[in-house]
Amino acid sequence: MSGLDPRQLLEIAVRPALEIMGDEFGGTNAEQLLMGTAAVESGLVHLRQLPNGPALGLWQMEPATFYDLAQRYRQWKTMVTSPQPSAEQVAWNLRLGAAMARLKYRDAPAALPTAWDIEAMESYHKRYYNSMLGATKPGEFRSAWNRLIAPQAERMWPRD
Image 1: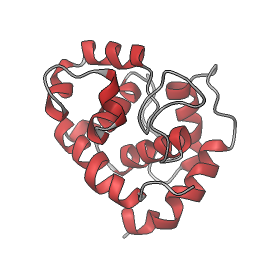
Image 2 (image 1 turned 90 degrees about the vertical axis):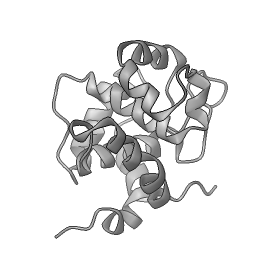
Image 3 (image 1 turned 180 degrees about the vertical axis):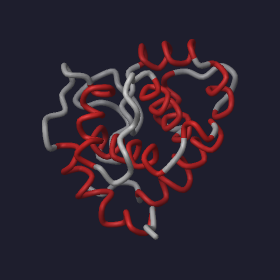
Image 4 (image 1 turned 135 degrees about the vertical axis):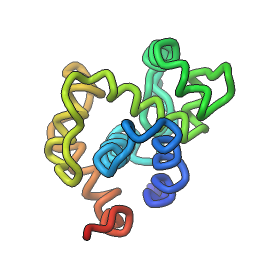
């Protein structure tokens, strides 16, 4: 099954959402973590958790998580959506989905992994996004990255 073009997702949704949120939220490492998260959570295809779960959008955020974050971080939600966002909007508002995923990572006590350290991003995703009780298994983040993001990564984040 084919999915979204990761380069377009980065340029049209992820990067603009992070720019709206401010410098403290952006950077190559934040972009890569969000792209890897979307890749492993939804395969850049699914907008609803399979088979019938509650999670929505490319970042597969559960409504309870969405509403908790929206309540605590009101200043960012209004920059990427209407004043009264609903959890269902993350299924079609990709900027909102990216922003909410980044806010979820903001809650983590540890700093974001460095850019290009996909192994560290996998551990960070499991611990702070998917949780130890979540369905993602070891190696799945890296596999999704290698399959969906890596083929275009050098064009998405050119190295000097």
